[in-house]
Amino acid sequence: MTEVALALLRRGDRWFLQRRDPANAVLPGLWEFPGGKVEAGETPQAALARELREEVGLGLCEARPWPVLDGPIRLHPFLVETQGEPRTSLAWGWFTAPEMLRLSMPPRNTDLVARLAAADLIG
Image 1 (tube, one colour):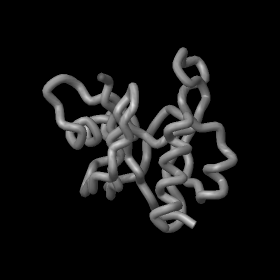
Image 2 (cartoon, helix red, strand yellow):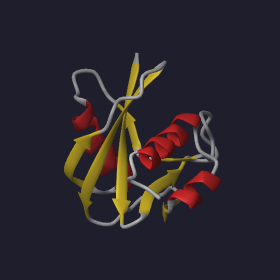
Image 3 (tube, rainbow, N blue to C red):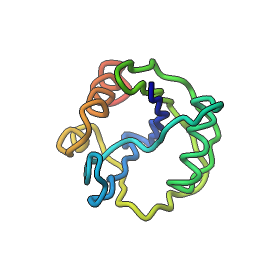
Image 4 (tube, rainbow, N blue to C red):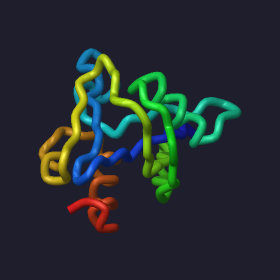
């Protein structure tokens, strides 16, 4: 089973999303929470720290596990606090909940937005 760690990074009422490369064969151009695959022998939290550093240029300060989303790909979301400013070659931004809901996102990322709203973490 493929496992993926995701960062749910918030500043005020805005959440960080990055846009997948439009040339990518998988989900091209969709907006998503940053993260990546958990490698063999790696914990989801270690994968999260590595992916944030490699893909977004952020250091991980704190990661609180959020309930796992099971399926063909198991998602391990974490509510995170980071240090630094995003540095990525991909398009990115800070979005409110209504803005996120207007973006083209992978279905499971949209599910996460709904779960965050249900938990009153976003308005």
